[in-house]
Length: 414
Image (cartoon, rainbow, N blue to C red; front, side):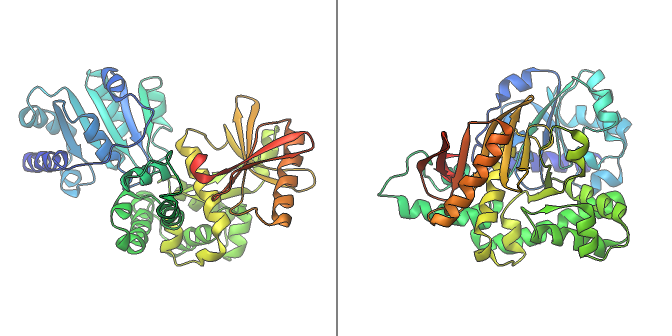
């Protein structure tokens, strides 16, 4: 174990020496580090959680354990590891635990370390990390930092463009970046090297299925799990119920289908958006819309993207809203009116609906504009909301109808 910890220190130092793009964030990391509560960085695999943790601690004296390393897991002994850390990292002030959910009973161990006064930063790729025992043991004692793939703005920054400074002289280059992001998404390693995107994300998708779901939950019927994942991917942005998925795939058990869909959310691969209703019981019964964490996964599965421009843009908007802290079932929903008109996103603060967002790739066609405008207005009347927006790929104007004003904005201004 000592040799593994020493090797991981060398890995830590090598990673710290590399240049990185600073992520856009509202978090004050110095303030977070000065707080003794556990700093928990969550998000899907390969979005830069470990990098962000290293950047937070770059100028600090910190110890490091990487639990994505089977050598460490195979010989794991919590009683042996702490004296070894004291030896390899003398007088360390912080402890970074990377992908800590891989450790058996990790929540109990982290709670022990917290009570011993150790200031920890931990990363994890599982949405259920704070359920059950962890939430009970560390209620009020952790600070969560959420991370996702690069945003469109961060992708502009990587390409040395300011998203807020788009003009006639650079609009063609800007359009190319927008198109590229819409189709290929924002996974950091694929943004840096677009030639590998499709192969990289296809491999990552399978790795998440097998490493974070099959192995963790000891799934026996891997074929059915894979079929459910691919079905959700091909139906992204569509409303689906558990029965819909089970029927479409001829699965014998709806409960197993529900279990698999929940498993696919755990590693932040898919999200499920509920239909807004003031009555919780009715909300739970309605079909949920399915979204994927990054548009690049759609491209990597070789679906016909030319037919999916509107859905790709809608998925991009959804992920951006998640990035900004909106939470399905609490502050983010879709809505369908009594006449079956739909608005893509309902943003809520407390019990008040604060904004309605419709997404349409191109509303230059008169019939398309009428359809989208009529839908958002009817939903706005039922939900008593005046803050209305239609997000398009590149249009900007204002539409007024029925004493309501709808702001039409391009995706760069969301």
